[in-house]
Amino acid sequence: MIFAPVNGYYKNILKLSLPAIAGLSTQMILSLVDTAMVGRLENADYALAAMGLGVIATWALVSFFSSLATGTHVLIARKFGSKDYTGCGTVLNNSLMVCLVIGIFVAAFALTLAHPFAQFFAADKTVGFYAGEFIFYRFLGLPFFLLTVSYRGFFFGIGKTKVFMFSAIVVNILNIIFNYFLIFGSFGAPKMGLAGSGMGSSLATVCDCLFYFTISTLPSYRHKFNYFKKIKIDFSIIKEIYKISLPVSFQNVFILIGFLAFISISGLIGIKEQAASQGIFSALFMSLLPCFGFGIAVQTLVGNSIGASKKKLAMIYGFETAKIATYYTFLLGLVFMIFPELILGIITTDQSIIQVAKNGLRIAGFAQIFYACGVVLSNGLQSAGNTMYVMFAEVITNLFIFVPLAYLFGKVLHLGLTGAWAALPVYILSYTTSIYIKFRYGKWKSEKGKN
Image (tube, rainbow, N blue to C red):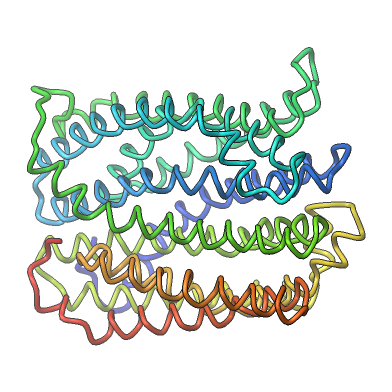
């Protein structure tokens, strides 16, 4: 598949990325619907502000371990590119074992810290209580989530992104249903408010794990990759998974800590501004999640190419995928800049929140145009083994540029929420430039394809 002539590059990219984008888009729809339901609760200001803290805080921990999908994805993509199919199955076995153990341990630890963590970051005690409830119920499904992480890495690595697409469609529909029942107490379910969103997501995660397990038992996969046969721990594989994944883990955490700090800065400006920032972040999912779909495609294509010792092809796929992703974010960025009130109206009916958020969404719409190139090429660098560089690029541009500038503009200079969001384009342009230079001129093309 990956050795097609030039006119086949886009076909291969879209064949992998479109199902991934479709699956991620259902998560985007879930996020918008979930935020819209929470935005219609009593005390929507507090609920949306708490949801902003809860979602980002939850992702901060979940993302640290969900990056195990990256290590699994990259190793399997390389082995698949070199036609080592049994090796793909061995990687999956070890990834599943590691994720199960970590999931149980981390869930038990996180449940005890949910409320203290939320209160520490919340500017208001009511917001902290709601956020703590959301985090607690969301972490109940963590062990099942990490098992799905391993399965995703496997199916991404062998180029079967449609499996992820079908999983996401089914599971996110169930998630919306569960959330509706538990948020509003419909059809005899307990009325849990924001906490019901966390519980509904955990129930949906259990269903997702069952879906992947069922697909993995199909003979067409079991016979080709020989997983679940003679299962044994291979520490060399586990080491390789962690060697690739750990920098990505820290990168994800730094991203989310940065945005958590930004939400907290918004709370220092005002509760209304904190709720508005959550609305802007929810709207940005419409562009960022599909970008991650292109990232999945380039990670597979670069990994396959490296496994087949074709690094020039890997570089071509990186840049061509970045071009396609940028076309998408450009068009959607224009919509955000021209019709911010329309986009925000999908998320909340509170006109005061919409008015506070609209200028911030315009700024975010402009900035995210340039983010596509950074996301895609960073995934290409991760697949090539440059995970440490990508991590440091994120740390410097997010924590040392974005967060301080947001505080300076928004709080110190009294420019309000619009001033705080003005720091975003500086962060995005700095990050994308550093990633582009490394992908274009870095030494990864002349090094061995291992991390």
